[in-house]
Length: 110
Image (cartoon, rainbow, N blue to C red; front, top):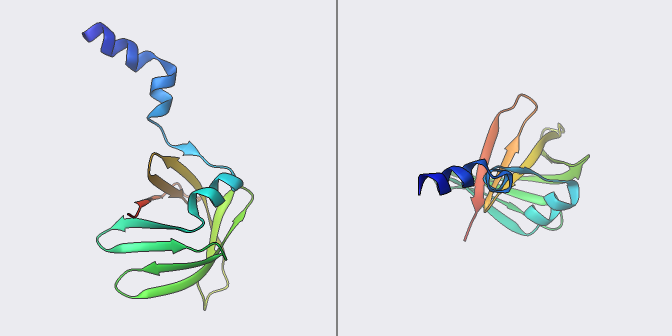
């Protein structure tokens, strides 16, 4: 049995299946548009197909989102600064990674 477990661990397809996969622009749109993510502790975010987003953490906050150069970008008025992130996916988990390497994970809300 140990030999079988070791083979699975060394098999490249098995190891790759356990990792987050970097999404392209089209994949980001498919992963987010019309969806809602749950970040835990009552914090959620919706991504409307009309490129509006709502972040709920005790109270709602409205912003806009876009895909630019294969990255998710958002702006939260009154600021006009667009923050952009790489987006990765593993199963039902979406990971946003900023330029410093900090990651935020959300799972699809049911």
